[in-house]
Length: 357
Image (cartoon, rainbow, N blue to C red; front, side, top):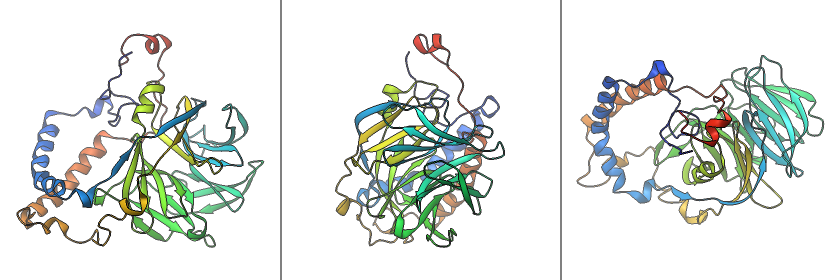
């Protein structure tokens, strides 16, 4: 079966487009106008690659283990040689312990139909599992998955990770990560994530790594995971999983969702919503001590668009950008929708032959 990366569906790199949200000629024309507005900005950025550079890394595939493809994965952790996985959807949300060698579910607890489960993390010898819009995180016993408590928080819950002495980090789909200490569990501190020198949204599953200095995060509807510095929010490297996905995942798989570091081997495991496998990979991050410090002395709030002679981005164009951003956002929200439903089932005959539409 020939794969088309621009085709509708969960495997392509574009967002889901339902029939009623077809892009019309007027929207395309508007995008052309907006692109012309942004052209001066792109020329400035291209001439300062050292400031905006994000190193792209290809993961080395080590092994794969079967994954329950009915699991709408929202979060993944590894503890004591076992996968701890959170699955979502109203009426299907669960938390489960999975055998890392076989992919078989050892223990599972199903949430009430009123809750849409999200990310999870290991905390204080227990498990914290977020919910999407219900403003509550459940706490479970590590071995039995019995509920032993809960935590309230404001806003949506998408992903969570534990950085030990620096507390918990939470993502809510925005351009900020929220931080809480380990005693009060109140997410009052905020860190803006800067990708390519500017703000970026849709941060989702989180994995705290490397002495709490970095967070690995995936973006909703993206085949990559990104390395974020907790000291300043800069994204300096990303790991591209598109080749692994193209080679091993069927069209019916959803978005990448699930990152876990194995403390025993130092390798990483990833999976996704309704994916057919867990993938163990080796990731060689590129010279973190220098690459992630590129031009860190320049504050993201500085007006660096005017820093280079002959490339000034004047007040008029900046005003036009400010006007165009809300327009882009309206277009984006009209044609995209957070994946809260399982992808369509691909029939066996479609999977084995012919083009899937």
